[in-house]
Amino acid sequence: MDKKIPNNTVTRDVKYLAEPTGNIYESVVILYKRANQIALAEKKELNKKLEDFRNERDTMEEVFENKEQIEISRYYERQPKPDLVAIAEFEAGEISYRKAHEEE
Image (tube, rainbow, N blue to C red; front, top):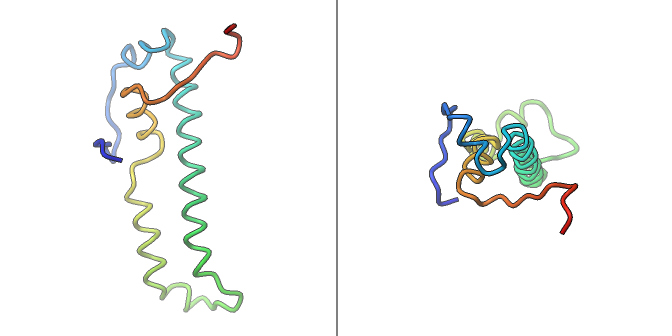
């Protein structure tokens, strides 16, 4: 991602989030669904990377000593939270959405 996404909470004016849809509740649902997609994708990617380190015979000592696994986990912990990414995409107009009851 090239855009700058904050790693902490940012105060936003609610009326700007409601502008694209005309309704704050619709905007929140769109943001929730996109953040959920992002979170699931990140979780799947992390689990895939950590699967390489899984071993049937791991002891507790071996699990805690694996530095590569710890670094991968720390990388994902430093990433912006999915809801902040979703808000940045929404504000940039990168999320496409449609109402279920609209006729085309």
